[in-house]
Length: 230
Image (cartoon, rainbow, N blue to C red):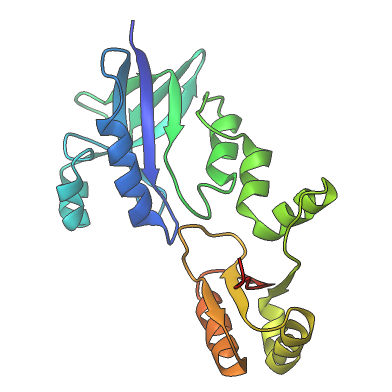
């Protein structure tokens, strides 16, 4: 019998579109002789949808039309079975019920790649592909990962992390970065991937712009010295 896979992609993240592309590429490259794949699109509200159009990249040019042609579902644990079930359930007529053996998250960014989605799957008892909750959370937080690597004697660049509360004293924040790290400095969101919100600053004017840009994507800003002589 084929293994029934729910391929999850999308989700509430600034890397939503990247995840959609990755997820559909994964669907198209799965061995259909071994796996029965159900593409599951998660909207930016983390609502799950399935349907004939969900696995077609061209359908994502118009999300509203895509959703109107698709079926919203929820994932439930029904005794010894994991199922994708129509939501809301119909009082009359046939409801969608799809058995699932394993979930395959192909996701990027906060709320989905950082342990949030993994925790949800683990809570309702869904076997899933990839890192567990702790590894996902630690791996997504650049500062925590640096601390762990440094503790294990892995050479890493020194870094400083700041929250939005530090932004109220922006000059002090920039002083700490300039004096502690020195220019050029890389400024990045502490918990995003795909190079979102990352920039290199060579002076205080650029540093201020970098902090402003990064703060659009994350409540924590990470700074580290930019290595230029490799």
